[in-house]
Image 1 (tube, one colour):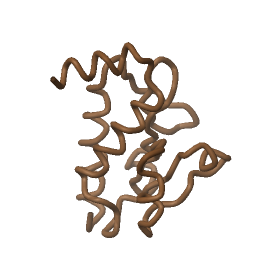
Image 2 (cartoon, helix red, strand yellow; image 1 turned 30 degrees about the vertical axis):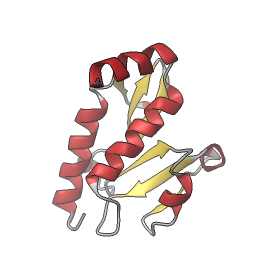
Image 3 (cartoon, helix red, strand yellow; image 1 turned 90 degrees about the horizontal axis):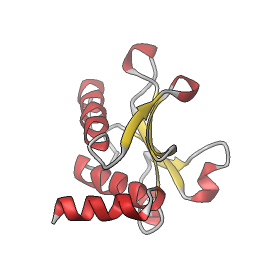
Image 4 (cartoon, rainbow, N blue to C red; image 1 turned 135 degrees about the horizontal axis):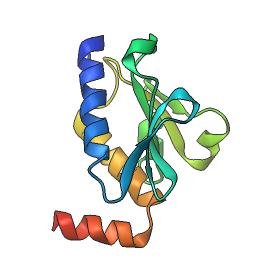
Length: 126
């Protein structure tokens, strides 16, 4: 995702899509934007564009964890979250495509959400 404008646009698109998941809602702990389901974060979007920070996101992965860490734009998340499968992704020229990021947000949601939320998602997507 070359270019900061393109990266911020991708971040905005992914945030909007994450909010479309069943029972998803936005919160701003620690001054960051996160999307939660049932009081649990399933995707971190970091600081907003006007703060001067670079765009990125964080997701919890199980199945795709090793694949993600093979990318130079991705590293285990800080604060001990990396030990639980969380990865931090810089949205830059080397980051995965937006479709891969969508898949990883979906994987993260499914790892964090309650079974009833997952059933609602599957029924909606069927």
